[in-house]
Image 1 (cartoon, chains in turn brown, blue):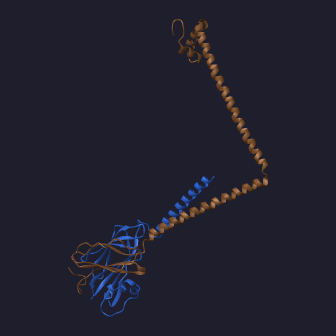
Image 2 (cartoon, chains in turn orange, red; image 1 turned 30 degrees about the vertical axis):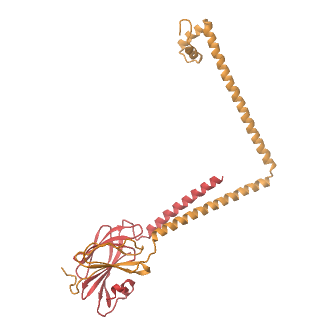
Image 3 (cartoon, chains in turn red, brown; image 1 turned 180 degrees about the vertical axis):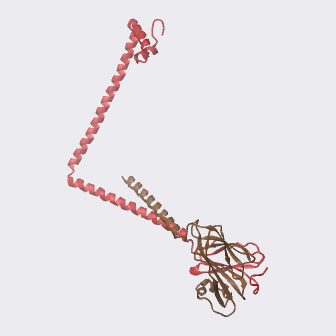
Length: 198
Length: 158
């Protein structure tokens, strides 16, 4: 604030009632005595009045337009409904219900189809391929570990690994029940030893 | 409206799929003889095969595998023992054999489809074998000398 006039910011704050009461009193006294500051304050009041008035006017006009539009829609709806007889309106409702039922049927059908697909996938995974393996023979006499081929039908017995030690042995794969593959590990031993061989 | 029905359909389909998947898995688990961590019932059939003429046990005759050419050298087959055992994961089970040896069995793995991995060994004869077994399908080990014949061992899980 200068010695003679109040700064614009302070005057604006005074106008907005943002000054402390004591300071506002000082500004009020100055404005009452200073024509220039009073003129500024009046200008602020006018501008404020102009803006608030414009805003109110716009809001009022907008509300009126919105209200008119809504009222027109409601009127149109009422007129349209009045134009359609009750029997036809009920018919439309029943059609909608039928459409809804069809939608439900489609939904249930889709759900059932998806469930069947999942079930088929799960069953096919659990049953495995129905591959029948012919009898095969694998022999080793070296005592080295022997690995039999990995792919086998489910429902079979399979030798994954065998260690014959110092003996000679054979792994047979023969056909079992219902085409299943059955593994036989055969290790010969001299008859008469009765298993008591060293 | 149409979009809402489609989303409802998909929601319903997803829910039904989930229900079917869970129930299928549940039924598959239920179909197994016991829980994956539980014991597996099994039996060992100890058969003596001999080249001498003699009777063959009817129970042996019912096993088509023993009619395979692999076993055709035996003119008679007799069941000596049929012990029922219970295999627990990583626990050794010993089955005494008529020749004084012991059949050692260890369940090493239980699979979700019901198959089991079993380590088989007979000290002083068969160091070790890892066998994958399906329920009902036997695994055979044969060749041990005993009483002028040979032992045929069948291991079958239930």
